[in-house]
Length: 213
Ligand SMILES: Nc1ncnc2c1ncn2[C@@H]1O[C@H](COP(=O)(O)OP(=O)(O)O)[C@@H](O)[C@H]1O
Ligand SMILES: [Mg+2]
Image 1 (cartoon, protein in one colour):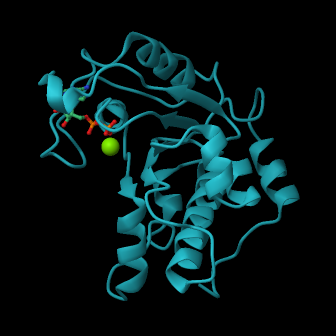
Image 2 (cartoon, rainbow, N blue to C red):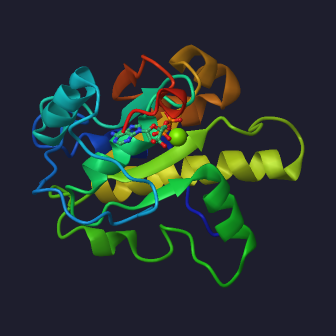
């Protein structure tokens, strides 16, 4: 963890402000849906995504709404599938759960996303090619004295800083926690990064029970 450079809040603010329009408003090119790039076992289609979220996806990728997207709601509402349906329309859209980041950090043979050339995804800072997803935020404790809690917290912060420095903050953060609960769960520097864009609550039925899709 020592070699991770964590920018100051001022440095983060100046990077976000590189956006040609307003902070966080960044166009992301999309294309026709392709074969799933990540998690092919989890079947999803954009057609069955909640209409409000679909329209938010349009305004985010067209640079009218602010990145990052904080997507939250009860389990089974379709958060993961919706984010992946959007990723399927992007070039290079990497996806991790917090647990996967922790497992990578603990396994010296597997590199973390910002160690495998996050830059590779982007030609210029102003032209992000894809959306990185960090899922299952808040699933495990992130504050406290235990080293796993500190590691969790450091990795989420490093992920957010990686997105800001390579992609002007373009990311989707997914959690079961409301923004208010998120603020109580993570420290202020993480909350200010993750909650700096657009929030959306995915409501509705538990689709795991309803057999939708
Ligand atoms: N857009 C979608 N297309 C197809 N199936 C979906 C979609 N959204 C949800 N589902 C179904 O609902 C289940 C739960 O969705 P998931 O995205 O895992 O919910 P959450 O991440 O909110 O817990 C999925 O396993 C899938 O069967
Ligand atoms: Mg999920």
